[in-house]
Image 1 (cartoon, helix red, strand yellow):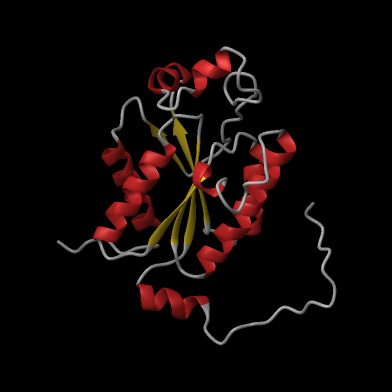
Image 2 (image 1 turned 90 degrees about the horizontal axis):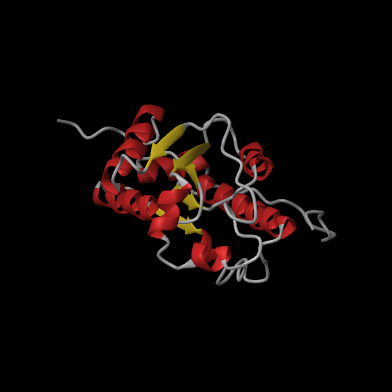
Length: 206
């Protein structure tokens, strides 16, 4: 599925560099990849960070797992192969966003370590930041806003991560957020602090 089938194609280079775009935006492009169990709080944190960055005058955008499946990836299910293709496509989209200078937040369960590592391999050093949203499965099931765990436990949803499918925790994430301790606002502060330390955005001057 990943082989190039198109023929007679030539890559074109534009006249505006990534550095020029970043200079216009006063930030450096990055792909913040939030991974964790379903209902761990990934999307809530991602949108909280996006809102906080916008309030500081930064251009940020969230690529959300469910939202993407309404359009770009609506032809994919939840088998291991489809999950891999889902993440591959988002990795390529994320790479484009980073080249555009966006502070990009990708909120995906992305349960397989190899799939996440392939996205990292697409990116230049420092452009991919893996954030493990570490939430005990008991808390995820307690939250369960969509009732998915209940359905999975009843056998109504096959290939459900954490119940009938595995979740492989990141080996060396750049950031771990424990949502049984941190609120979404506190988690957002951790993410923004990391962006400042990496030089992707400048700290607010006192």
